[in-house]
Image (cartoon, rainbow, N blue to C red; front, side, top):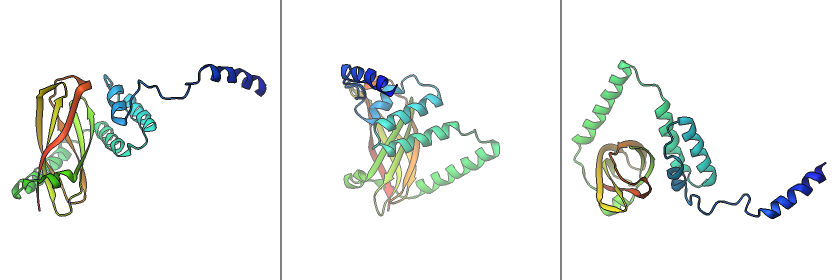
Length: 196
Protein backbone atom coordinates (compact mmCIF):
# COMPACT_ATOMS: atom_id res chain seq x y z
CA UNK A 1 0.00 0.00 0.00
CA UNK A 2 2.75 2.56 0.81
CA UNK A 3 4.30 1.99 -2.61
CA UNK A 4 0.96 2.71 -4.26
CA UNK A 5 0.64 6.03 -2.36
CA UNK A 6 4.22 6.94 -3.25
CA UNK A 7 3.58 6.05 -6.90
CA UNK A 8 0.56 8.37 -6.92
CA UNK A 9 2.27 11.29 -5.11
CA UNK A 10 5.41 11.47 -7.24
CA UNK A 11 3.59 12.40 -10.50
CA UNK A 12 1.50 15.01 -8.63
CA UNK A 13 4.59 16.62 -7.12
CA UNK A 14 6.40 16.61 -10.45
CA UNK A 15 3.34 18.14 -12.17
CA UNK A 16 3.14 21.01 -9.64
CA UNK A 17 6.72 21.97 -8.74
CA UNK A 18 5.59 25.16 -6.97
CA UNK A 19 3.67 23.31 -4.23
CA UNK A 20 4.92 24.56 -0.88
CA UNK A 21 6.60 27.64 -2.29
CA UNK A 22 5.44 31.13 -1.34
CA UNK A 23 3.15 32.95 -3.71
CA UNK A 24 5.14 35.70 -5.42
CA UNK A 25 2.17 38.08 -5.20
CA UNK A 26 1.83 37.42 -1.44
CA UNK A 27 3.18 39.63 1.34
CA UNK A 28 6.92 40.27 1.42
CA UNK A 29 7.11 41.30 5.10
CA UNK A 30 5.35 40.73 8.41
CA UNK A 31 3.77 44.21 8.32
CA UNK A 32 2.49 43.61 4.79
CA UNK A 33 1.03 40.27 5.85
CA UNK A 34 -0.87 41.88 8.75
CA UNK A 35 -2.03 44.86 6.64
CA UNK A 36 -3.29 42.72 3.76
CA UNK A 37 -5.07 40.11 5.85
CA UNK A 38 -6.58 42.20 8.68
CA UNK A 39 -8.86 44.27 6.44
CA UNK A 40 -12.47 43.85 7.54
CA UNK A 41 -11.59 41.44 10.38
CA UNK A 42 -13.83 42.08 13.39
CA UNK A 43 -13.32 38.83 15.32
CA UNK A 44 -10.59 38.48 17.94
CA UNK A 45 -10.30 34.78 17.09
CA UNK A 46 -9.71 35.58 13.41
CA UNK A 47 -7.22 38.33 14.31
CA UNK A 48 -5.21 35.92 16.50
CA UNK A 49 -5.20 33.31 13.72
CA UNK A 50 -3.94 35.90 11.21
CA UNK A 51 -1.22 37.07 13.61
CA UNK A 52 -0.08 33.49 14.20
CA UNK A 53 -0.03 32.80 10.46
CA UNK A 54 1.99 35.95 9.74
CA UNK A 55 4.41 35.09 12.58
CA UNK A 56 4.95 31.67 11.01
CA UNK A 57 5.60 33.25 7.60
CA UNK A 58 7.97 35.91 9.03
CA UNK A 59 9.49 34.52 12.27
CA UNK A 60 11.98 37.40 12.63
CA UNK A 61 9.17 39.81 13.55
CA UNK A 62 8.73 38.68 17.17
CA UNK A 63 8.88 42.23 18.61
CA UNK A 64 5.87 43.36 16.60
CA UNK A 65 4.01 40.19 17.49
CA UNK A 66 4.45 40.78 21.22
CA UNK A 67 2.88 44.24 20.85
CA UNK A 68 -0.04 42.68 18.97
CA UNK A 69 -0.58 40.04 21.64
CA UNK A 70 -0.67 42.80 24.30
CA UNK A 71 -3.24 44.70 22.24
CA UNK A 72 -5.50 41.67 21.83
CA UNK A 73 -5.20 40.76 25.53
CA UNK A 74 -6.13 44.32 26.47
CA UNK A 75 -9.17 44.25 24.16
CA UNK A 76 -10.34 40.99 25.75
CA UNK A 77 -9.82 42.12 29.35
CA UNK A 78 -13.07 42.85 31.18
CA UNK A 79 -13.91 46.51 31.70
CA UNK A 80 -12.91 47.75 35.17
CA UNK A 81 -15.64 48.34 37.73
CA UNK A 82 -16.34 51.87 39.03
CA UNK A 83 -13.85 51.58 41.92
CA UNK A 84 -11.09 50.17 39.68
CA UNK A 85 -11.75 52.86 37.07
CA UNK A 86 -11.28 55.60 39.70
CA UNK A 87 -7.95 54.08 40.84
CA UNK A 88 -6.74 53.77 37.22
CA UNK A 89 -7.81 57.35 36.47
CA UNK A 90 -6.06 58.66 39.61
CA UNK A 91 -2.84 56.82 38.68
CA UNK A 92 -2.97 58.22 35.13
CA UNK A 93 -3.60 61.74 36.46
CA UNK A 94 -0.68 61.43 38.89
CA UNK A 95 1.62 60.21 36.10
CA UNK A 96 0.50 63.07 33.84
CA UNK A 97 1.12 65.66 36.58
CA UNK A 98 4.56 64.21 37.23
CA UNK A 99 5.34 64.31 33.50
CA UNK A 100 4.10 67.85 32.91
CA UNK A 101 5.66 69.24 36.09
CA UNK A 102 9.11 68.42 34.78
CA UNK A 103 10.79 70.77 32.35
CA UNK A 104 10.75 68.81 29.12
CA UNK A 105 12.74 69.77 26.06
CA UNK A 106 12.69 68.68 22.44
CA UNK A 107 14.96 65.75 21.67
CA UNK A 108 17.96 66.28 19.44
CA UNK A 109 18.04 64.28 16.20
CA UNK A 110 20.60 61.93 17.78
CA UNK A 111 18.40 61.34 20.84
CA UNK A 112 15.35 60.86 18.62
CA UNK A 113 17.22 58.21 16.59
CA UNK A 114 17.63 56.24 19.84
CA UNK A 115 13.85 56.14 20.37
CA UNK A 116 12.64 52.98 18.62
CA UNK A 117 8.94 52.54 17.84
CA UNK A 118 6.97 49.47 16.76
CA UNK A 119 3.28 49.76 15.85
CA UNK A 120 0.30 47.46 15.85
CA UNK A 121 -2.47 49.12 13.86
CA UNK A 122 -6.06 47.98 14.01
CA UNK A 123 -8.48 50.46 12.47
CA UNK A 124 -8.10 53.81 14.22
CA UNK A 125 -6.25 52.31 17.19
CA UNK A 126 -2.47 52.62 16.95
CA UNK A 127 -0.64 50.78 19.74
CA UNK A 128 2.97 51.89 19.73
CA UNK A 129 5.73 50.31 21.74
CA UNK A 130 8.45 52.85 22.44
CA UNK A 131 11.94 51.63 23.37
CA UNK A 132 14.05 54.38 24.89
CA UNK A 133 17.70 53.56 24.16
CA UNK A 134 18.90 56.89 25.64
CA UNK A 135 20.94 56.33 28.82
CA UNK A 136 20.17 59.57 30.68
CA UNK A 137 16.90 60.77 29.18
CA UNK A 138 13.28 60.08 30.15
CA UNK A 139 10.85 60.45 27.25
CA UNK A 140 7.83 62.56 28.32
CA UNK A 141 5.98 63.22 25.05
CA UNK A 142 5.85 61.63 21.60
CA UNK A 143 4.18 63.02 18.47
CA UNK A 144 3.48 60.66 15.59
CA UNK A 145 2.62 61.64 12.02
CA UNK A 146 0.21 59.64 9.84
CA UNK A 147 -0.36 60.28 6.14
CA UNK A 148 -1.44 58.83 2.80
CA UNK A 149 1.66 58.38 0.61
CA UNK A 150 -0.30 59.41 -2.48
CA UNK A 151 -1.47 62.65 -0.83
CA UNK A 152 1.33 64.58 0.95
CA UNK A 153 -1.22 67.12 2.19
CA UNK A 154 -3.01 64.45 4.24
CA UNK A 155 -0.39 64.40 7.03
CA UNK A 156 -1.89 64.54 10.52
CA UNK A 157 0.06 64.69 13.80
CA UNK A 158 -1.00 63.15 17.11
CA UNK A 159 0.71 64.07 20.41
CA UNK A 160 0.65 61.93 23.54
CA UNK A 161 2.15 62.38 27.01
CA UNK A 162 4.16 59.28 27.92
CA UNK A 163 6.76 58.34 30.49
CA UNK A 164 9.51 56.07 29.20
CA UNK A 165 12.51 55.98 31.57
CA UNK A 166 16.05 55.51 30.22
CA UNK A 167 16.72 52.07 28.69
CA UNK A 168 13.10 50.96 29.21
CA UNK A 169 10.06 50.50 27.01
CA UNK A 170 6.37 51.36 27.21
CA UNK A 171 3.32 50.70 25.05
CA UNK A 172 0.90 53.57 24.41
CA UNK A 173 -2.32 53.82 22.40
CA UNK A 174 -3.06 56.60 19.93
CA UNK A 175 -6.52 57.10 18.46
CA UNK A 176 -5.96 58.22 14.88
CA UNK A 177 -8.68 59.93 12.88
CA UNK A 178 -7.36 59.01 9.49
CA UNK A 179 -9.25 59.02 6.24
CA UNK A 180 -7.29 57.75 3.27
CA UNK A 181 -6.30 54.71 1.29
CA UNK A 182 -5.33 51.94 3.74
CA UNK A 183 -2.85 50.51 1.22
CA UNK A 184 -0.90 53.75 0.99
CA UNK A 185 -0.84 54.96 4.59
CA UNK A 186 2.40 55.47 6.46
CA UNK A 187 3.43 56.70 9.91
CA UNK A 188 6.52 57.80 11.79
CA UNK A 189 7.63 59.37 15.05
CA UNK A 190 7.60 63.05 14.13
CA UNK A 191 9.08 64.48 17.33
CA UNK A 192 9.51 63.80 21.02
CA UNK A 193 10.31 65.57 24.26
CA UNK A 194 12.19 64.41 27.30
CA UNK A 195 13.98 65.37 30.46
CA UNK A 196 17.39 64.51 31.90
